[in-house]
Image (cartoon, rainbow, N blue to C red; front, side, top):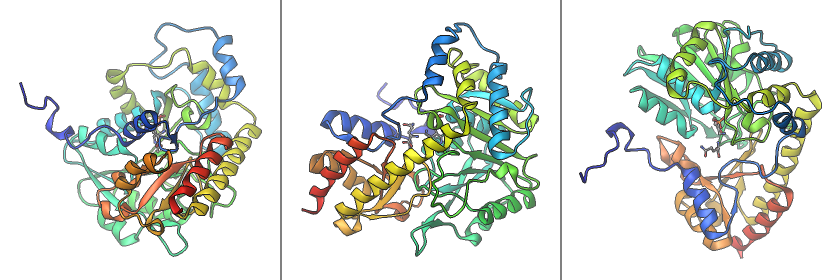
Length: 390
Ligand code: PMP
Ligand code: GLN
């Protein structure tokens, strides 16, 4: 039995870059600005609620407890003006990751095509492959002002007779791009012309900085899109609890039922003891959400200052936990080599973005840093990175 037991279609997928780089940070004692997880806890009201509600030790309902479904719908109404029914138009999932996987597995026949944007979040490629579907990535490239854009003709050309859905992540990991209303309108028109679904990953919905060109707009809120869009988000980023893995999908009942049908055979249910606390968190006053954003924006500025000082060409980040940097001014040509060498050179870990592309050349010189860390950690990392140009 010397053969690799893994099914052939998964062999291209090794250990995720996040796992690899976090292990490298641990083994070298480096500061981990690779994997995006905060190093502080979420809001006290949410953490207290875990204790206050006691542990619910048995299965919650398949769609999630009513209090959480009501809170998800209320939060979407408050911030985005969306109007979903807590009974049937929302399902709680094991993080956004499971919602994305269940949506793809439930909607795509083998050979169906998924239009997405590269660099893409790594689980998208794996879920598309697990479904036997095919990804059609459209490349995001930095324009003259450093902001990432896509080419309209390239997007149009990505659609064809087998297109089943567009999978859109905005605010976008790893680039920090926030898709503009004009870009979203084009995507919406193409979804309608080609009669395909949209699945949106909006886990960074509250992390759009005040200097972004435009605010976040959920694709589901555009004319004609509510009936064909599954909107996915999660508690992990907004409430600094990435390990809780509480996510959700909202949309028309038929699309939500598709996610639930698949989910019941993946995990059935998840996070029973944590669901009441996420309901509390979603109901926090607006000041929580604006304070959270302001805190991250300040840390972004701190890290961008440090990276610039260290000699990187830093691209603008309008949102998320992340900023990308061009390694060319430091003599780098390959981000993967650069990131593997970085711990030994200066005790910092970052993530190469080329692994999130099919057309890897487009991202070979770019690496991603996470700034969801305490200020003293960012300052120490910035200090260490100055060694690169000395
Ligand atoms: N989508 C994007 C764009 C992400 O950056 C992440 C990582 N947090 C996820 C999905 C996964 O979210 P969750 O941990 O809720 O599964
Ligand atoms: N979303 C996190 C990131 O982009 C990583 C999550 C994971 O490790 N799967 O860094």
